[in-house]
Amino acid sequence: MTKLETHDMNRGAFNRIAMTLGLSAAVCPLVALGLPESAMAAAPVMQTPLRLFNPHTNEKYDIQLFQGSQWNRMGILSCDWMMRDWRENQTVQCDRKLYAALYVIQRKYGVVSPISVNSGFRSEKTNAMLRGRSIERNGGASWETPAVNSQHCKARAVDFKVPGVEPRTVAAFVESLQLGGTGNYPTFTHMDTGSIRRWGPKP
Ligand SMILES: [Zn+2]
Image 1 (tube, rainbow, N blue to C red):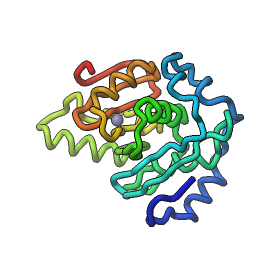
Image 2 (image 1 turned 45 degrees about the vertical axis):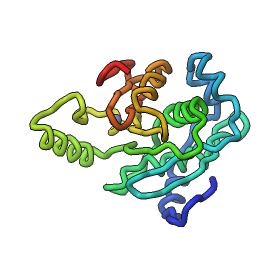
Image 3 (image 1 turned 120 degrees about the vertical axis):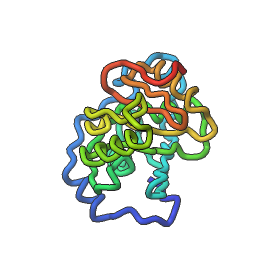
């Protein structure tokens, strides 16, 4: 992992995560995903780091997600850190399929700037707060309102933005991956590894 900016990762927290998270036996991540061949074709150069940016904490990292054809344990931990609930300071092990899919997406669009991770794992408390805020803002729940039983709370979802690419274009690609859920929002794309479904306008 290459540190790009001066914002210090909390090393103590990071080391605790590294100690407490067990990572299962390594498998070739992209093959294990069962992604369509079109997506696989976009992904073979696995030495390229995954570039992520958290707009809330202003952290920006180049993450070496793979070592050869295997997962890189430190890379996974770095992604988990970037996906943490920063409001509640909670870091959990997220579904790594999300990371491999972000990698595939980065390769697909050949982006130079980091992918912006707007929301990853959410504690129940954070999700309820965001849900309440959305309902208040819109005068009721809508398709854009965070669900009570959000995949974000299960560490199986990410809201993200690919710089320079329309969110609906990204949503169409995410849907084609058939990884799980796709949310086509005006300013970002939701991707999760739950059941296959879509909400928001057809991308
Ligand atoms: Zn979401």
